[in-house]
Length: 409
Image (cartoon, helix red, strand yellow):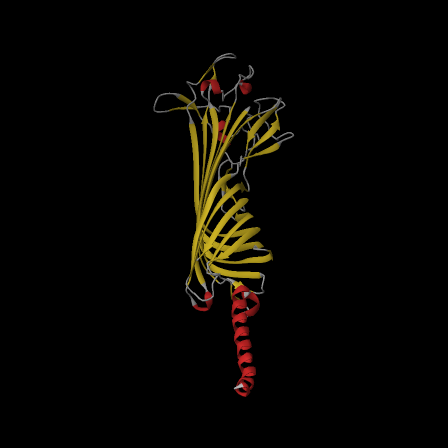
């Protein structure tokens, strides 16, 4: 009996050692998946189950910026309410842009060959900003080149026409004869307002991959759709009566309900291919640095509308004004065109993640900075003396914080 045990005991011990080593190796493969799988192994939370869902939601706190958005100039008046051929000591006035809240939602599903997954993501952002400005001593606000200047020409050319209500309205044909086309009437008050709405929708095919034990790389490709609506308005007015000469009367007195307004509306929609890359580097206990960048080339329609509205008064004498002679005048221009618009987005931040339920579920929380830009989407209409044109090259950008949560199961 002793001989029998001594003969087979070494083989039995060796078998136990091999079995224990295999179990340890299997356990290690779950705990340290990156070092024991082939290159570019799937970076999901589970290996045994190939059906994998991911849902995400995010809150964004961001700010819009627009190129070519100078709407006025604060200029040294020198002679208030007189024609100014060139701005003196002028600084440009931009539309106000406040930080606002938006959101992102998305879902992804993995059931494809070689661990590819399909994802759908949607983001929405809306910002409304308003501001009131008053000129300092001996300064005034001059409207920009994006207005129809003929409507606020305070000099009446010869001849009148009679409208339907029999009020005599001076013919306003443009700037004074012999004067530059860019002459301005300076205003004391300026009210500004903007509204920006940005919708982004993406359908992508992606593959989360581990290139090393701590580095996760996810290339993705797909289709991007962007829809943008931008409105901005500027209202110019004055509070007091000017001088005794014709050129110095206050034709835009707020007491009589007079004002000069310029309004622009931009709309854009486009669809096109998208390509991007996400990366995450684990450097601590469940903490990593992540980055996400993509580019898209969309094709769609850009629409611009510019409306200039003038409600003026006229002087009866050096001390009396009336709104009976001048009627409100409006000039509106609109243009549409199909074009390409490049789109870029960059996101970087810090991520925390945790796995549970036997490594089949994962939660991720991250905070980061995002910057996106939509090229060629702001086609500002410039009113020249007898014609108009669009200002090319202007686009819309957005930047700010992103607070995001993701759940894999």
